[in-house]
Amino acid sequence: MSAFDRLNARLGRETLPLLAFAVFVFAAFSLATPLFLTGRNLSSMAFQMPVLGLLTLAMMVPILSGGLNLAIIFQANLSGLTLAWVLIQFGGPEAGVGAFLLGCLAAIAVGATSGALMGAVVAYVGAHPILVSLAMMIFLRGLGEFLTRGGDISGFPEFLGVIGHGNVMGIPVPLLVFGLAALVWHIMLTRTRHGFSVYMIGSNIEASEYSGLHTKRTLMLIYTISGIICAVAGILMLTRFNSVRVGHGEALLLVTVLACFLGGVDPFGGFGRVLPVVLALVILQMLSSGLNLIGANQHLSTAVWGLFLIAVMALRWLGGRLRYGTGRD
Image (spheres, rainbow, N blue to C red):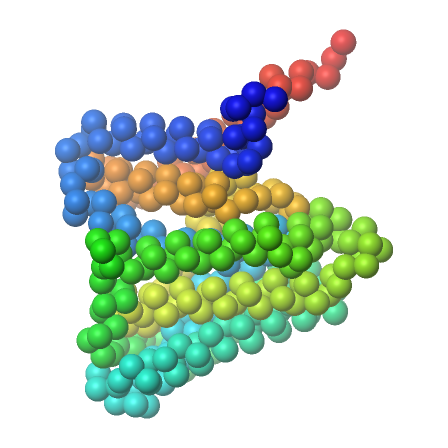
């Protein structure tokens, strides 16, 4: 085995092609507009990507298990509403760090509870994850609209801006949060028994049961963890925008699925790695920012994302044909 093959096997077969494409996109937009390489634009991308990245991680693990979590946006929003409510109870703009920490714990509890309920129904009732998560999405959206009457909640302590807009040694705090979450996801999927169980369930849940894995417990934990990372995304959104709204970020739902598939996550479960998904997120962010800088219509980026997915699938199919042959004599 060559050094290239060993590197490709270690990083994942999707990583190197995505890395090459990321370099190509970066170079193309750098040549297309001088604004792309400015510190302001790079900083803007670094602040924009983390929320989408956290929501993508929340979507990734259910897909790896052969399921789906359509409720991620509203889990994040309701968790953000929970934090907002706690802050308001402690004085709103005058609330202290203790109130914020208490609100974060409450927000994470809401995200975890909603995820655990979905996981319990999927695991013990046997309902399809799409139907279960769709029902949870509708419930959380309706609950949020009822609690807020469809409006925004704002007016929070100024120190929250440090989380949403601050830097540590020049690195945006939201990017650090996402980087830490991605590292935890990588370790969880590659170094823990739970990660092994996730892949096994996604590959063949019946075989996993016969092999002695606690599939029901694992499924419940999968959706619970997904809910927790949604809560983190909701907290980050509140600190970024200094407001909470139930429908905030609805357009990101399908983008998270797109990022997972671009990153090589098998839509039927059982295969996928964190690093290629992170690279896919970087590419999507560069495409969005680059097209905006060259004056393209804001809706064009969505079309380009779709074309990019089609191109990637075509290249994977072609690569498979070239590597393994046509199967004909």
